[in-house]
Image 1 (cartoon, one colour):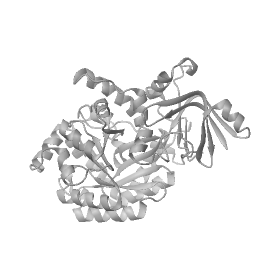
Image 2: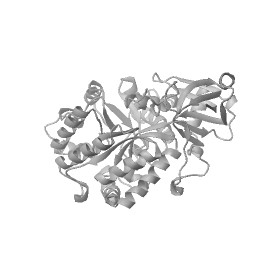
Image 3: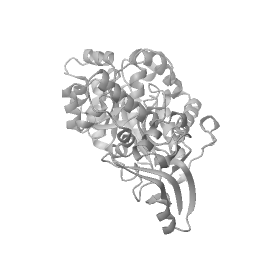
Length: 431
């Protein structure tokens, strides 16, 4: 038994939180035994080992709902909008992942960087190569991160070395899923990149396999106005981008739709009817001049919502950064586009933890500090100029989200064990 002591923030599905200024987590056999007041728990477990993170905030491990492993070295690089940026920067970078040594080195650094920033679960696009995806799973398993990974599938309108036939894409995905799906913390996600790069045949086959095997599907939707116009030209018989996915069977309660910036009211209704999940990627939407998702509006209208870093369109692997960006973009949307209530830091933190777990159907395992859940934990310092005992609950939450000087976690625990890395290129000694 061990007690992890600090300022505990425990989020819930209804967007409420419980905070203990002097709190503790009782950890036994990799699980949360109890969460509460430190004095009470230390009296209850007098022989427990105490790990004291005084004046540090302890939150559940963060959950990144949309990121690209092969892209992270391009964070903050390039300019222009989505399509030209993909052609100039991303497709050449993804082409390098045919090299096994390169793919493994990049995967090692990628996962270490996620964990250093408190992300213990992630939904990930690998490169469009079967070997690169297999390596990503191997490294994720070694790191003990909870990983939902899929080989990016494209069969048209993309560089020759990155595409395969619809049949080959599906065959590779099925083989990878047989090997990795439900192997410990691993899950396979069918990953058609977006409608521009995927034929109707590939998307139909994706929907069929997903329905048969109960797999999640991840793709992009309505990110950029030029992208939307191209989809309209490619699929003239459909009334909207969202309808393309819907009519081809892609949209279900296990479908993750990144961006969703420019949706019509009818498209929103389709997504709600299918119970699909819109993934907010605020930093990426800014970096690629895509627009501002009306996140608070979606929440008010009961759209399932989560947050993703979308590296490398996003310029940070920190989900705390994305939580901050989501709040700030909500303010801009209300001022510049349509007057709306503002997304709060509390809501944003919940979206990056328990709500993500709920949408991934793993909230019985991770997402908050309920008894019996895996002890996936991230510890972050407060700004050094603040005294926690002088702050309100909401001020502490805001301080953690906006603490841009301390995006590296002070400590990360996976299944109750302190995470450390042997990869010096991806590891900060303070962890």
